[in-house]
Amino acid sequence: MTVCIATLFQWNYAKGQESPIWGPGAIIASDRMITAGDVKYEPEQLKIAVLSPKILALVAGDFPPHSQAIKETANQLQGNPSPTPFNASLIYGRSIQATHQRRTEDLYLAPLSLNSDTFLAQQKDMSDNFVASVTAQLQNHMPDEVEALVVGSDGQDVQIYRIDSRGTSSCYDDVGFAAIGIGAWHASSSLMQVGYHRRFYMARALSAIYAAKKAAEVAPGVGENTDMHVVTREG
Image 1 (cartoon, rainbow, N blue to C red):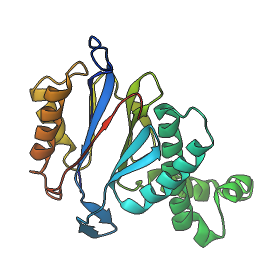
Image 2: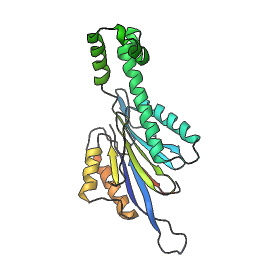
Image 3: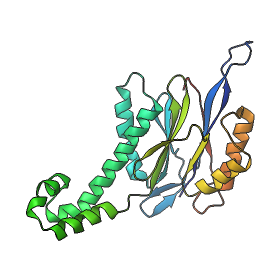
Image 4: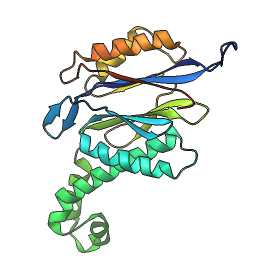
């Protein structure tokens, strides 16, 4: 129950009295509505996490899986001298997938004194019907309703990646914007109505993403508070 939005735009990298030097930047916006199990509330807490000095994450859906993914991603990026948004999105997605796998194992395999490794290793001793039944349960179990946006710079470009509930990462650079959460449809519709693209300049981009956030508040569960950040090549 939330909305998080990221848009690419053109930032002026000129110093002092230089002629404008246009390059990529991003503006991100989110509400503060948090979901933890069946509890939803809007505390004085950001839903924007710092994964590295130049990479941020915005989260939607159940909070606990994100807490783990944020820690794991930040820890792995810490040892990387040149982390990229692409690498961060892959690490984040793998953490979401690992959480889903652990939960399905706990539900369907642990009661049988099995885990993924032992289930695969012992299939030759099991009936075909039993293997098919357990496999179907594992494959059909719906993942947690979690999504994330990874927005950041690799030093040259500024990029947007969306991670879905299955941990799959998709690049939205050419689209120019991405939105997640229950208010995503409203936010995306607002941006499409103004013909949003990554060549917008700062003022127009800022007004467009703020209008998209306000439009998303029509959706039930989207909070009224708004946090916004600008991401450039420098961070």
